[in-house]
Amino acid sequence: MKELRTHAGFPIKPLYGPEDLADVDVGRDIGRPGEYPFTRGIHSTMYRERLWTMRQYVGFGTPTETNGRFKYLMAHGQDALNVAFDLPTQLGLDSDDPRAEGEVGRVGMAIDTLADMEDAFAGIPLDRVSVSLTINGMAAPITAMYYVVAEKQGAAADRVVTTPQNDILKEFVARGTWIYPVEPSLRLVADLIEFSAKRYPRSNPVSVCGYHIREAGCTTAQEMAYGLLIAAAYVERMLARGISVDDFAPRISFNFTAWGKIFEEVAKFRAGRRLYARMLRERFGATNPKSWMFRTLIGGGGSAFVVQEPENNIVRGAYIALAAALAGAQTMALPTYDEAYTIPSAKAQLIALRTMQICAEESGAADTVDPRGRHGGPARGLVLCRGADERHGDGDPRGDGPGRTDGRHRRGREERRPPGRGRAPGVPLRAEARLR
Amino acid sequence: MKVLIAKPGLDGHDRGAKVVAQALRDAGVEVVYSGLKRTPDEIVRAAIQEDVDVVGLSVLSGAHVLLSRRVLEGLRAHGAEEVRVVVGGIIPPRDVEELRKLGVARVFPMGTPLPDIVAAFTKEARET
Image (cartoon, rainbow over all chains, first blue to last red; front, top):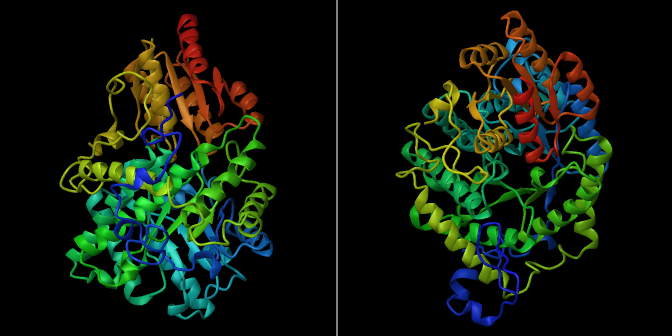
C-alpha cells in the first residue's frame, strides 16, 4: 500500500481503531468540550449556542472605499470586520513618504490621520461590531486611533471589542513587517496589552499568529509550536511587569490557518488547545479557566489557492471552512478564489462569505459539538501533540526559538527549501544581518 | 553567471525569492540575496558593486511596475544598462506587457514553474 504522511511528516495509517488509543487517558487528555484541557473545544455547547464569527479580511485604496466594502459584506450577513492596512501604514510611513511610492492603498487601506480612521468606520457602530486590526509594528498608534474613533462615536470603553494583531515576533520569524529591533518592539506589544487590559476589558490586545509562519513554509506541527512559544514569550513579558496572569490571559487570542488535509488540521487544533491549556495552568499558574482557553481565528491559507483554474479555489475554500468548523474555530475567514492573482473582488468576497454560511447552515458541521468521531482523530491529535512538544523544546525561549530576544534568531529554518544544503551564497544586507 | 535576487519596496513576502535563489544556486548560479525592503537605489548599487549579470526583482505587493521602472532607470543612470532585469511575483497579466515595454527582460507571474525560471535565467546568461 502506498505510504502517506501528514504535512507534519507523521505516517498516516489506512485505518484507526481503539488500539490507537491504548496509551491515551481519555478523561485526562480528551475530556469533554468546555472542560480542561479543552481538546474537543473551548465551549460545552459550541455552535449550537453561538456560531463562529465570520470575518473576511478586507481593505484597499482609501478608507472610504474600504468602508464601502465593509458595508457591502455586512449587508450580506457578515457580522464582524477584519481590516487590511497598506504597507506604508503597517510600517509607520506617511502616504507621501518617498519609501511609500507605489505602495499606497495596495494591500490594504492607507491610514495617515485620525480623520482617515473616522472615514474607515463611518456609519459602523463600534459598540456593536467587533473589529480585528491586522497591524503589528504600528499596533499601538493604530489601536489608539481606533479607541479614539470609538470614543468619538460615543461607544463606552467596555463595549469596544477590537483585536489588534499586535504579534511582532511572527513578523521577525516570517512576515517581515517589523520596524524596531526585538526588545523595543516587545515593549510596545506589552504596553498595548497592559493598557487594553486595564481600559478596554473586552478588547483582545494580541492575536498570536501561527498563520504567517505556516504561509512562510513550515509544517502544521511547527505552526502550532511556534504559535505557542510566541504566546509564552508574551505571557512572560506581562508577568515580568508584575501583572497577574489572570488579568490579561483571558483576552489572548490566536490566528491560525487550516488548509490541506482536513483531519490533520483538526488534530492540530485539538493538540494545540490541550498544550495551551496545560501551559497556562501548569507553567504560568493561571486559575481562571478563561486563561486556559485557546480562542482562535481560523483563516484558510492563501498559499493553498492557485492561479491555475482559479474557480477550483472555491471548492478548496469549502473544505477549509469544513476543517475550521470541525476544528472548533471561534472566528472564520476564507481566502477568496481570486486571491492568487489580485486584491479580492466584491464577487469573490461574497462567495467566500456564502461558503462559510453554507457550511454553517447546510452542512451539519455546526449541529453537534465536536461532530468528528471518537477514534482516529484523537489518536492523530496525540501524535501531532508529541510532534509539537518536540518542537517546543527546540524553540524554548532559552534556546533558539522565537521567544529568544537577543536578536540572534536563526530565521529561515521554517522555509521550505529545494533540495540542497545551506543557504544561498551571497552578501546579506542589513535587514537580514540584523536578525542573525 | 551571477544574479542579485532583490526585494524592493515594503513587501515582506520573501518565501518565493528565497526558493528561487536556492533553486538558482543549485543550478550552479552565483546568487546574492538583498534581504527585505530595499530601495531601488540600494538595489542598483548592490547590482553594480556585485557585478551581477541579472537582477531578479520579487514583488508581491502590487508595486511592481513603479519599482521596476525605478531600478531600470537607476541602472541606466549608472551606465549599467547591460544588467538584465527580470521580475517575479503577483504580476497581473495586464502588467506583463507594460513591464516588457519598460525594458524588463522576463516576467514570471504567479504559477510559473520553478524549472522554467531556472531555465530562463541560464538562457539570459548565455545571451549576456
